[in-house]
Length: 113
Image 1: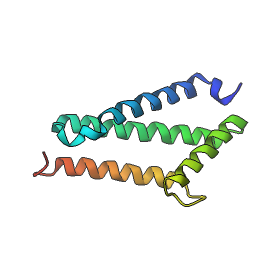
Image 2: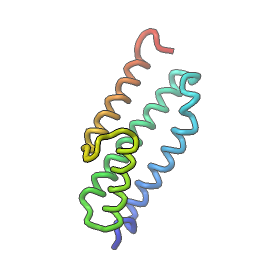
Image 3: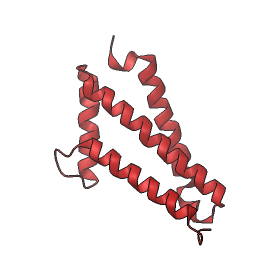
Image 4: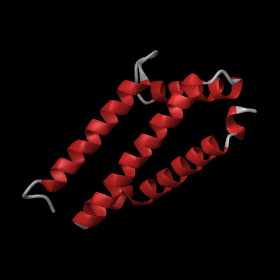
């Protein structure tokens, strides 16, 4: 069975797509959101990072040619966004999680709107 024939993998990819769409729809209105709306947006970011991390790990563990091709495409996309060639994607995921934590902390700050 191909990597992408797996119900679990297809479900994860659909979830990533759905979350990305939800997040992108509201990213430009973030600063006009209520505190609760901002928190929900941040929670979606967290969920997206978690699902992406799991899918990337699955890609890394697979020897399926299509999975290896997708992993390579992800690495190339990361390079185009400024990551150094050969960078560890787990570091990227960790940094993204730290940024989301920072957003949450700023939202909880006493002077946050």
